[in-house]
Amino acid sequence: MALYLVTGGAGFIGSNLCRTLLEEGHSVHGVDNFITGSRENIAALSEYSAFTFIETDIAKPDFASHITAKYDYIFHLACPTGVPNLTLLATEMLHTCSYGMFNILDLAKAQGSKFLFTSTAEIYGQPEKFPQDEEYTGNVHPMGIRSAYEEGKRFSESCLAAYVRYHGVDGRVVRVFNTFGPGMSLSDQRVIPQFVGSVKRGEAIRIYGDGSQTRTHLYVDDLVRGLHLAMNAGTPGEVYNIGGEHPLSIRSLAELVIELTTHEAGIEYVPHFIEDHRDRRPSVEKARSLGWRQEILVRDGLQILIDHHIPRPAEAMETASENIDQLAAGKLAVI
Image (cartoon, rainbow, N blue to C red; front, side, top):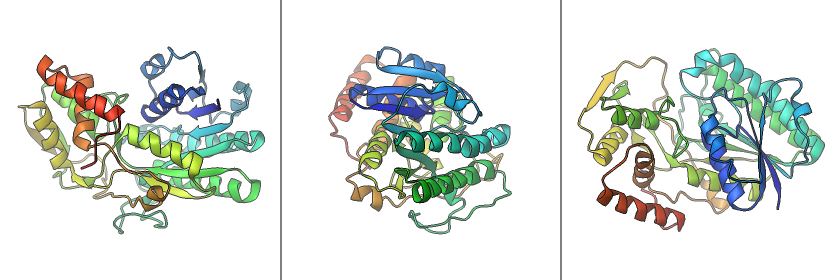
């Protein structure tokens, strides 16, 4: 079986990707410095003898000294995330997207590794085109409060393009849209864990703004399948959007969480603390051309995440177990 390197391996998406690769019988080395990753996610992977963890910062000059293996594949997911971290960790984001990107690309070049970089829907900024396809160049503010992440990821994509064109690196990009599922901490500032955390604490669900802004949502197993498929079937130098296809307003999302949990504390509307993008929706035709599609209902994915954090009565758990079995068998459909 192949040997994989997963940077950001202690993160929400990275740890789910590591688990999937290990379940397939591969050997996996995960890298993280725990700026936003979780040691709990790594502990969950420790049962696999084929998993090795390397604690280091990919942006440091001595990164290569921590590498002692030759990798067949490199999934590059490492980067601090979270809306509050746009100011708290802006420098770290920029270092990861520049020095870190060069370090990982140099490793892929030296070892001849097949390479996939996870970019973000944030590179489209405040979009003026719906849905956003991979040719859309976006509407971003290079001096705006979100620029460390938006422009950092755009720079990383440019780095990959240069290494593909001029150094022959076998690399491709996946732009990740809103994703959720087990492995997300309820302290995560993204909208779904914030809503579930409020339910668990018995507090009103807090919505920033009027709740009319829309996002699509994708269960993490669907994203991991997409990353795997883009790595193996994607074309070098190409970009693929992977995300949910069905827009849902933040208010509607809160109402769905309330319905699934019978939460009684209601919704609280407060002014947003940062400039927020109004709408985000991917075109996924290129991913579909590889054979990918969204398979898991947002409702069912939410129920599994809720059950992971908030225990339910035994009779309700029987239904949840049936849904989990169907998820494993790939029998659940999208909205």
